[in-house]
Image (cartoon, rainbow, N blue to C red; front, top):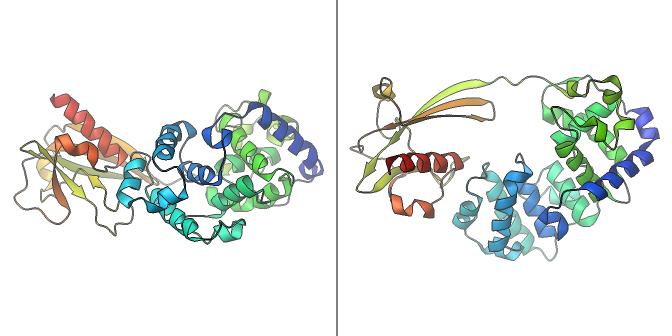
Amino acid sequence: MALSGSLLDRHAEFQSALLGWYRAHQRRLPWRTEPSLYKTVVSEFMLQQTQVKTVLPYYDRWLAVLPNFAALAGASEAQVLKLWEGLGYYSRARNLHQLSQAIHALPKPPRTPEAWRELPGVGPYTAAAITSIAFGAPAACVDGNVVRILARLTANRTLFRDSASAAKTFTPLAQALLSPSAPGDHNQAMMELGATVCVRQNPLCLTCPVRPFCAAARAGDPESYPRLAPKKMEKRTVTRVWCQRDGALLLHRAADDARRFARMHELPTAEDAGFDPARFEKRAPLVVKRRGITRFQITESIHLAPPPRKLGAGFVWVPVAELHAITLSGPHRRWITEILARSV
């Protein structure tokens, strides 16, 4: 993509307008009001693919229990996952744990994006965010919010395969627009603008601080940008079973080397529990739940079933009174709570 000449010619004005707005209107967030490297790292990991309003209670609880790198490095993985429970994308928690152990073992934290990218779970965006905010490194952050802003500023009509390819294309422009004197504030301002003003639908163009620089606003069609190829969604159905015995609920604990949910508990699928899913087809389920994960639209039905005759590895009977002490994936925690509430 050729860089937008008119925008770059006015880059100093753009930076001034953006930073002035941010310093006057930024949300008061705990990792901003009392900043530290550790708080920046924790917030950046939690904010990956998760909205601020969802993160806030998790962040507060996390900081109360694990206030610094040393505390996190010394925590057990079980404790880390329990604090993260319900936030999703659990590889982030494991990566954050491993990262803290690596940082704690160093004489001092690295200060460059290149060095941070060598650490567990740190990609280009996270490395730029952490080092620009904590150390003033001149590295531009480019996520979905920033892609949307830059696509609208330039009215770029390229049809991108996905957000990752769009981010790669817009990175040179983001870097060229970055404020050299305040890269951390500039990056946070872009993120803030995308989250609160230059939103995906019904953007607040009339109150946008960089409206004078925006080609899409002048054309009157900001919602047309960015242009991303539609995702091909696959539909899946999952049948799960609800088995109780002597006040305990049957759950399946994922293996230690499972890719996504290692050592976490979920309601078992019918197949894993030794049942033919067809036996439940004509029975009314306890609940039916629908959710989207990456490119899958999943419909999950939970059916009452007798205790299985034989159980394989990973199955555990957990007393209902002790469910609070184990780590469940967020949806399963909600589903179990709902079903138990109905049976009271």
